Image: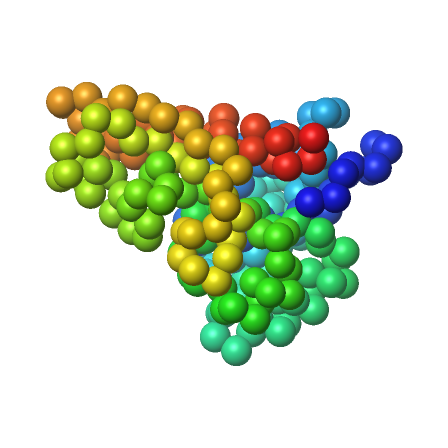
Length: 189
């Protein structure tokens, strides 16, 4: 990732599918002076994503795309908006290899496990069922292989005997909100 030049922030798009808590966190992070990014575009694959409300709240351009046959339109919009970084934040669709190649090395994702463990879905219940002592979250570069890109940063938390998939999800989410900005700072420093 190129170094930050002067005070110019890197124009960033955040892709979401759900509640948008990581999106909201990234928007707040982008507003602090030392942040290397600005959130300039929010893209969702569904109009039902509750996180889209943050586009209105923070006056950020948003676009909803059905991903089937629309990646060219998304790439065109990203180019028009001069987007240099994509942050996936609860984006529940897999981008095509072609899309990833066109944005090679400039797409990052937050995942609720200690990668390479538990790629994909249901990470918390899988960790509990396997009697793991620890779990956490990882920020990684997006590649053509699901949740397999180089890990930028991880955050580890202890799994308690009383934890359920729901309680674990809540604890991991708190860590995600700290880890994503830290990983972005690491990329640009």
